[in-house]
Length: 143
Image (cartoon, rainbow, N blue to C red; front, side, top):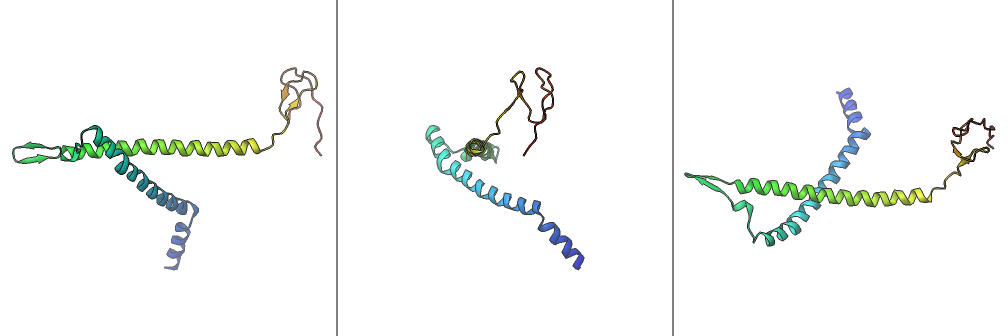
């Protein structure tokens, strides 16, 4: 029994499982945000355009059987609205993240380019021969 418990602890507290759990919690919170955006903002705007028609009220009556196809249409619409919202939110987050990375890259000091002493072309810092003029380069000692 102790061996089983140790195996479970090793599995449950591995980095991957904890990362997955955190991702699921953040995903759940993100879903709540997107659902609120769709239900509180997008759907009222669409009801203005469609004349307050609710898809969920649409149904076919065949004999005495009701087929509520409107519920299916509403589910499809909700999926598409959520997908579009997620797309734009992720795009915004990626843009903000890229701005942060761009600032970090600008702040990092760049090493000056090494130039060939014969043709003055830019060469790799570890090159022993210039790829442009094929001259042998002097070996630089690093201090």
